[in-house]
Image (cartoon, rainbow, N blue to C red; front, side, top):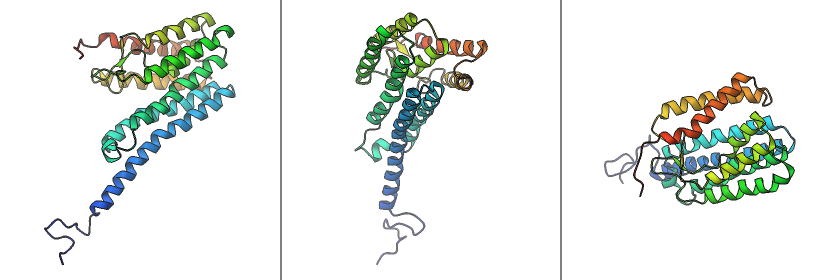
Length: 251
């Protein structure tokens, strides 16, 4: 009988057998999917806060969901989750969770908080939900260099700025209509984490945005002029950063 650590392909007593390693990899991969799915729980907690009228808490829960969404892909790629567990689609799971946290919860908040006129509530809600559903179904939502093609349905960000700036209700309606329309316009928007060009700059500015956003939440979305100005300037940068994308030929 061949010894366990023999030269004919056996496994050493100090190592896991191949079957155990496969089980370990699958378990780790499935935990990544559970981690991604936990964003849905955070989304429901955000919805509960919105129903209670605690919009600062709502944005805090949405921020936690955003953090999960920001790091789960990196973990999944490092653990090769798509290869280890091909049965479950991480992309589909991500879209399910994102539709709740990026679209449904902020859409409800925009309407429930009275940010738009009563007569415009249903049209705004429909515009947000329908345009976002179509965008999430678009197989070409991203370019080859990881820019978003069209407004990427980040209604959590739109809602954040509507709560921060509190524009006149008709201005909020125009903003909702404009972003819904830009979902289908062939302009690009930067993905701060995935676009390689100026990635360090984008991550640094995104981190600064996070600090300022925390200050805004700590003051129940009523920060001083300096914080509001900083958040507004960063929003303008990320809104228009796609305009400086190097020209590429897309197939």
